[in-house]
Image 1: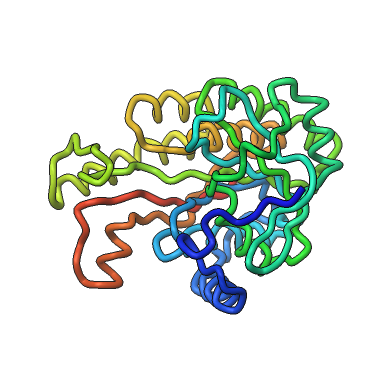
Image 2: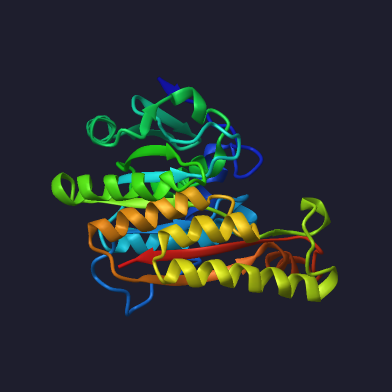
Length: 289
């Protein structure tokens, strides 16, 4: 089975040459901190269009690659389509991108399904979910041989338990595997029907403070807190992916989270065009060490 791209041509370039050029530019635009720990277990990436969040996603992926952690990857995606209450695995075949195929790590997928009863295989559930897809061409440029196990993870307490189970399997049998979670943060403004802080600059500041609440919880590596916080304050569309990633990385041995970059779509638009949009979505790059 081969999954076809769903957002190529809208969130990122569908043309091979253009996609390759843009992915390389994103990677080259970010630096890996010189004091980054030598051992990383995973990270968090945003999943909007590359114009808005590609640089932030590249920051996480480049950092992981610099530590040899972008070879075999379990990647948790957000559940934008309401696929259910448990994790859904794309367990066989490959995902097609404008740059070629990204192979599914079938051995790893089988092992996770056998050891994590809350996971179920359902490749069809992944057909329209973009939160994993938009990472793959950037990952391919960093490592053309990368293999993945995509898992859609709903924002329920089950995500914490599944993440812990997966982390235990990886620590025991697959220490070379990295875990990545995909989320955007607060979706603020009239476009999203969410403006508890009002409009204008005051509203955008409210949104950033709302994001800071979530970042504080992630930096404390509080997986349960991620689910509660997102449910209450609507500041992570991929809360299940984040909670599972935090929980898995803790089980693997991670003790801290490092925020590499934070921005919003409003900030990006202001930098590009000199005007600030009244809508804003938050994006963060985080690694776990």
